[in-house]
Amino acid sequence: MAEVALAPLGLVLVTVWLMLPAYLANTIASIVGGGPPIDDSRNWNDGQRILGDGKTWRGLIGGTLGGLLVGHLQMTAGADFFSGYVSWGSSPYLIFFLLAFGALAGDMAASFIKRRQGQERGTKSPLLDMYDFIIGALVLTGLFGGGWLNHWLFGGWISYGWVPLITLLIATPILHRSVNILGYKIGVKQVPW
Ligand code: CTP
Ligand code: MG
Image 1 (cartoon, rainbow, N blue to C red):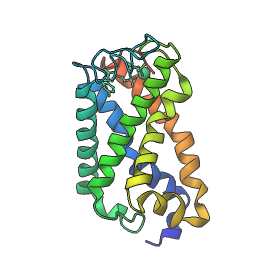
Image 2: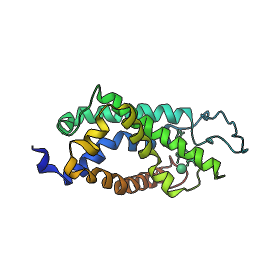
Image 3: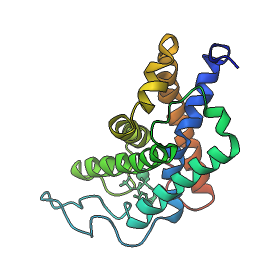
């Protein structure tokens, strides 16, 4: 199918589909997280925790591996869906890793900022909570993903380049909120945000 026939509505779907390893890395971290905190329970020089008990090794490693698994399942389910829309560069798995790890790194950066503002673990910080992981995923894929990010976000779709960006801005809070409410209901998250 011609790329043009799918755009821009298809581009919305492609955007959400491509970002799934990042979206789900966070969810998986909530499910498998717990145990030793990454900051080793240490405080920053302001007397507050560096990251807090909500950022654990199990969440980081499990979420990263989980994101890789999501990408793997996506490839198995429909690798063809990607072709033509994405230039993978060296390996799709590098991209899945960068998306998942980047999401969790962004989430850790947000926790660092929240702790510096004196906010306890689990407090709500609407903008940070909603966009932290997507920013982390975009930064890491942008830096280390070859032309991947550029290709679908700005490059190959130059006439519709605004669609992925708007999609991320709008879909991210909706997906994030829905998944978190679900996580809260099934008991893997302590708060619905
Ligand atoms: N989690 C984890 N390790 C990570 C990220 C998340 O173990 N690297 C788990 C923790 O159990 C955490 C839950 O996922 O409580 C939800 O993540 P998040 O909402 O990011 O953490 P909060 O507990 O809200 O802490 P913070 O205020 O630092 O965001
Ligand atoms: Mg939180």
